[in-house]
Image (cartoon, rainbow, N blue to C red; front, side, top):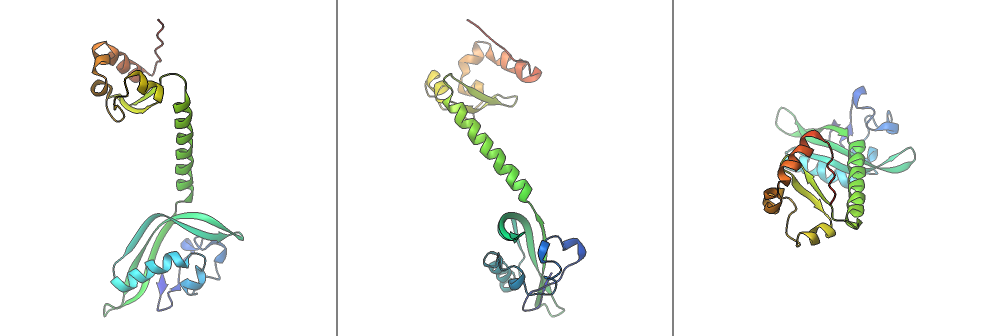
Length: 189
């Protein structure tokens, strides 16, 4: 919690890992002093709570914290809630939070891998489409595939809606079987 006009930082042992190397030095110090590296981000958030009396919450907020002698990109879910005295005056701010850096970095890595796969997918010389779910929704289709089907808008549509002629030709049952069993189907002319 942050207490008084200087927002002096008070915390228990469970919260001690949050300031990391700043612990125990940070205990009882003003927030602006403890969090110099991120003050330009969090100061307006504190001010909003102090001014409006309403809580503040943010998710996966990037905070460039200095750790181990260097600034690191960290991500946090946290909230600030006003603490009031018996007269209703705001005398402090309660802070709850947890670090989400690993989760955010994992999501970024996954997105980067997906982007890389999309690029490879797009460059493939053959016609390729990726279908998702039991309804066989077009998730991706490369340029060669779009050219093959006459550049119809298919992304986000089920095969039966986007290409009704393939259902009439019996491919719907084939797609259902492959989806249900996970067994591949190879056709040759």
